[in-house]
Length: 450
Ligand SMILES: *Cc1c(COP(=O)(O)O)cnc(C)c1O
Image 1: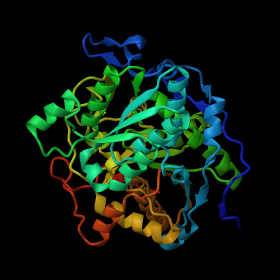
Image 2 (image 1 turned 45 degrees about the vertical axis):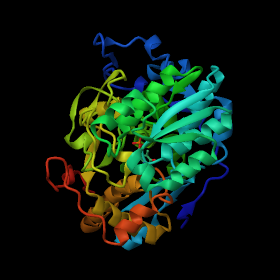
Image 3 (image 1 turned 180 degrees about the vertical axis):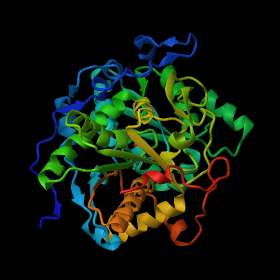
């Protein structure tokens, strides 16, 4: 039996999949906060290149991947699809568990898929400098790599708590030639306003976004770049699912359940949306389970409404699940999942009952991460560990019912820069963090069935 395979010879997808072509009703448009009217594309031109703005609202089902972007993708794509046979054995489950390994990218996560596309489009339109924020450091690493590849300058605002927890991310970002500052910083009005109120602020993605936008708007030939949430970012990530579809076909199986972790929703969407397209076309009953931390339960406990993407209220209003733009989550280790909002596309599919959200405590998540590492030899990023934990829970239920289901994990990244989180867990220093509202109940628990 062929249990592991790495499809080196596989062709890369030549086009991304655009789910906007297949939604049953249109997305609610982003609004200009000054008028509460749909925002004019020109209003976004200070922040993003024209091509990305067009992709925000494009209706073509497939959008060609530019050749220079494919050239960079070829350095590590297609990423491997592995069957986790050793994890299956450790769980004594009848389920088949596969994982699509985005940790194989140069900076260790899926984020390079959109970073490369965005740096390319910006460079092609004459932009010389990109400014961004980063939570756990994965996005800052990906964008600094992509900027280096296409010859752009790069500035990164890193959420302070992560900056302190992950000094090696800073070094990686600097190695790729970018400059990096902990956020909140004294460099921007947005940062100074937060520090005046709370000099010890751990920062948040919402604050760091405000700082990055402020610097991008005032700079010349400078634009802003976002690593998740927006439609064009999710579009670029679909290369994951398009590859995985071909790879699952080679393995001769169809996934019954696709699980992923959600911060802003991009890696999960990247894997799930192409399968959603096929499932809808062929009336397959594929399930899509999105896992988040219960201290930042955007999908399971947030409201669905228009909200700002950042703390200083500078972005357009997006229709999304949100915990409020001023929400500062407790400093849990999965920095990449500490965002108050959610991609409008994910919100839409949750509202439609297509995507089923669940929320977990970090202790349970790390327990499954260690189980996975010992079985498969790969240490998941703490964010990814939420997806792993969801798969473990479903596979255990399959074992109890002796059912064979095929589970596909979106393995968004490795955890090699997250050793301090693993050290804290192994030293018994991680605690069950009370969820928002004080409950420790796991939200969406009932969805973890086989
Ligand atoms: C950033 C990140 C996430 C969360 O972001 P999404 O946009 O929801 O994918 C998840 N996993 C890893 C490894 C990340 O770096």
